[in-house]
Amino acid sequence: MIQGILFDFDGTLADTSPVIFDCYAYATEKVLGHKAPLQPYLDTFGKPLRPSLVRLFGAGKGNAICDVYRERQDAVHDRLIRPFPGVKETLAALRARHLPVAVVTSKLNKTCRRGLRCVGLEHFFDCVISSDLVRKPKPDPDGAQRALEALGLAGRDKKAAPGTVLMVGDSPFDMLCGRGAGCETVAVEYTLVDRNALASTHPDHWIGSMPELLQLIDRLDGRQETDI
Image (cartoon, rainbow, N blue to C red):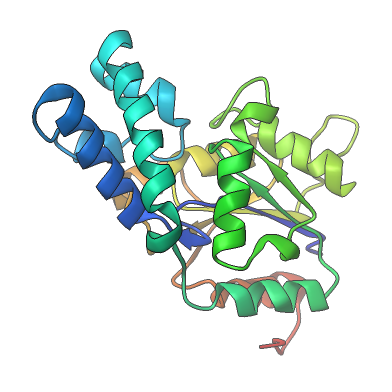
């Protein structure tokens, strides 16, 4: 019986790709003098921003790009971010079923909460576990384990009981994080991440849209009908 759901934010609940593409192009051009290729950065999706940029460009340029990126993000974020279709309706249905839900994100807490407010989702969640609230970010299970504890769904080993919690995300790091915390993993097919890279982590389930999550829960719980 499913007792709770953990969600990634970027690329899962909200389409932040316009924000990401704009900020990455702007920041790399300003620091490097040219727009850096996007694919190497896409391959880091699901991990915190600063260490990902440092890994790609070295400490000096990576930190500078991160600083410019965040300045640009403050300027364009609110007008470019948008929720994926069916997300609000699905979250409302989960609340109607009295299922606790949490966000587990590699973003900073203030940035994630800003995004949730912008797309009208913040009131649906019982907690938001961000990269600045954990010792080790994704793919480490620390964030998912903290969310489970906050929702009252963690066992003595800090993991979910088998078959009780789903982790929904769009990147390999989401799948690894969730599995490490004992969650069944759900990959969204509308990801920008390389499909083969995501499939290589062997998600337990795939959904093509967020409303399909309700159908999945019904199947797992042995129900015949959905609420939406």
